[in-house]
Length: 138
Image (tube, rainbow, N blue to C red; front, side):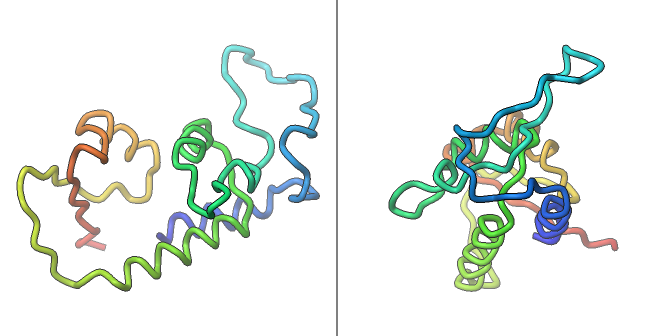
């Protein structure tokens, strides 16, 4: 949660001048990368209409693909997701009764790509139950 806020704040500082331009109308500059084999991350944050369905739910497939390419989100959209997630977590009880099988994961220290590797090894979260342990040391 804290990692996401830090990433969002950093994204806000590096954001393009206007967030209200539709993704399809933006023009990418010529690729000036020194190593052409390395694909550049998306230059602009994911457009609001690409992130959310018409009913207001998140398009998880679009979000996953964009983040996997190291893409950013608009600050307003990211804070909306954080606030919605916080509301959901506040409804959860402090003690959960879990049934096996379950995959227990250590602290990933907010590393998104470590999370993706865990999901590749453990299986799709739609089919696999995960328990993420917090950081008990520091």
